[in-house]
Image (cartoon, rainbow, N blue to C red; front, side):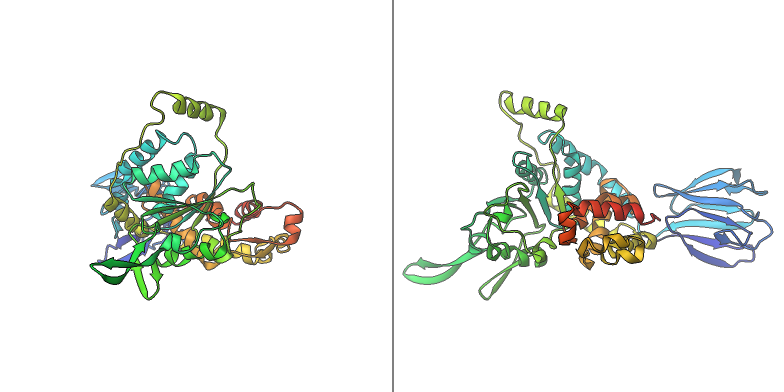
Length: 423
């Protein structure tokens, strides 16, 4: 987004000042955030703050006020390209990339998606938001919850609403890698034998890996290349996967017998680990009514196209992130690695390994997706906090001491977020 002010001086000189997400005070005083030594300015002349994508300029009791369109005002909302004056100093507010208006064009689509999902999936608003954020951030999602919480229904419904192809694979102990990626078979045509590749269920846009921890590591690893590179290699042939490609895996947290915990290398490939809880009493009553009525649950309708999803993914990466928000992300991640350097020394004995750089990248892109879902062209620290738990909970290792004291990753992340200063 790169917001900035073009400052025009009375002598014809010009300067450009980059803006951050923080409010700034403009004036002649040396203590002002933006000091301009000119007699037409008061010591603390005006406060510049944000309102969405607009700049709000508030007079601080100056002698010459704020002049917009030849009229003196005390408060002015300045949009991209607009100019104003403080005393004899001219200002023009400029935003290079018009990401904000583009984000607004998707506002109706996002609302349509959520409305259509809500007609079939009752409650689970937070899980829906995180799954949508993962989709638009071009990531993969691990859903954890006890049986019967509509994990499979949520993913299937989302694929239909987005008009994307969907395949479900039930992971079992006897599942082989070729059952997922596909296999090469001998094809006989008019007596001629040729080798023909038969694509597996991974060649889809939405792949649901149901109960992924019930299959051996060899089969789990078949997803690694697909999740990272968006391609599958069988023999000497490498084939690209459809775009967009999303893996949503589910796990049952209460049953561990006969399961194979996911290797750290594979867990790290999931952008988010979303924990789904029970519905409220009112929500469960609505669920019962909807399932018992004549005709059952209504079928979802497609409300956007594949092209819309791809365009939204590209736009998410263009959303503006201020340097201070980037530093906030880095501080959160480093606090998991070096808690003693952040005033959290007591956590050192509880953390066996901290979050990797992939967590920093994940926090950045997931924060942008969260801002997109809230119709903003810029990221705030609250976007980071909204996704931090789901981005980092599966990227922090616990020591035996932490496990003995029943301390979870969620408790550690909460303490870190409460301690690290928000910009």
